[in-house]
Image (cartoon, rainbow, N blue to C red; front, side, top):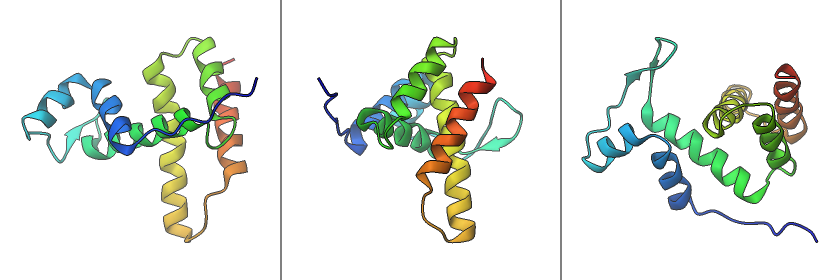
Length: 125
């Protein structure tokens, strides 16, 4: 039986992203989420952008769109990455593609995107 495609609303994806970041969720609920904070790598980052990327990943995974992203996420999990780290790996590639699409004014390249995700799987083997 084929897997049924599931759509996840933006609101539901945002709630999942907030659930995965309890400190930021509490700040969001108090309307105190900072515009910028220092990330784990010591560089400035936007919690809102970070959460939005998580939400994009959640929507991709819910719909398996592009086709194959769920299989890649499952493989990463089987290789020992936490649920959260899987989302960060996928989100990193999404961010790079968004930057490239904006810089080069070009459309999303699904094949390249999936190939880069597949390379991440291979790097964890």
